[in-house]
Every structure is written in structure tokens, then in C-alpha cells.
Length: 144
Image 1 (cartoon, rainbow, N blue to C red):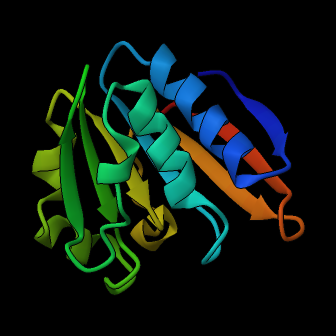
Image 2: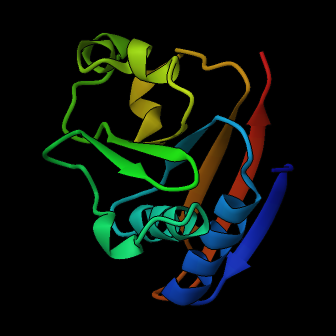
Image 3: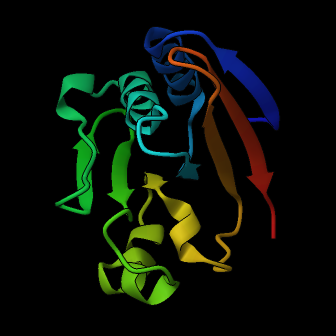
């Protein structure tokens, strides 16, 4: 992935962008996914999963389970920090440290809850709702 800004005009286009990114991933990668409720984080993740040869209908937001694993061309570990208190301590309590050591694609929804905690060689993906259908999706490499 490269630093870029994309505009999508439907949930299908957001899914397709996630699919293209998922299809391009060949090595373990951490994606820090941020955006307001309903912005399209799970739609993007479903597309990413499809690009990893995972049935997108199996991918749901792990709001209550906190962590879901999906097996495809690469392992996808999908975390949702929405219900956790702010700060890295709560995320470490659900095994974030061990998860980051996995040879997997790790998607962390609501990653802003990690505060200043830095994950080396990750990608920040921020989805901004511009209208009912339009989204701005900004991808930025995080090199530390």
C-alpha cells in the first residue's frame, strides 16, 4: 500500500477498494482503521477479506467479541476497540501484544483508542463520511 486519498461514492466502491488492497497484500500487515460510526469501516474490512479469499459474509464487526479470526490466503485478525476504554492497557488486556506477533493481516477498528501507542510499519486508514454515499479514504504509512 502507498500513501493515497481515495473517494468512493457507494458502499460497493468502498468494498471494492478494500478488495483491491486485500488482493495486493502478500505479507503480514497492520491496518489501523478509524472513522465515525457508520463510516464504512466494516464494509472496507469485508472487501479486504474478500481480497484475501475469505467469504465477506463471514466478516462482521467484532464489537462484542472484540477479536475475530478469519482464515484465507493469509490469516485476518479483526479487532474492534469501540467498547474498550481509551488507552493501550485495555487493548493489551485482550491480547494485542500477542496478536501483533502473529503472521497475519491485523485490522484494528477504532485504533484511535490506542492513544499515543505506536505500531511500527502499519498503515493508518481513515474513512470520513462526506455524504450518505460518499467517503474519503485516506491511507498513510506509519513508519517508526
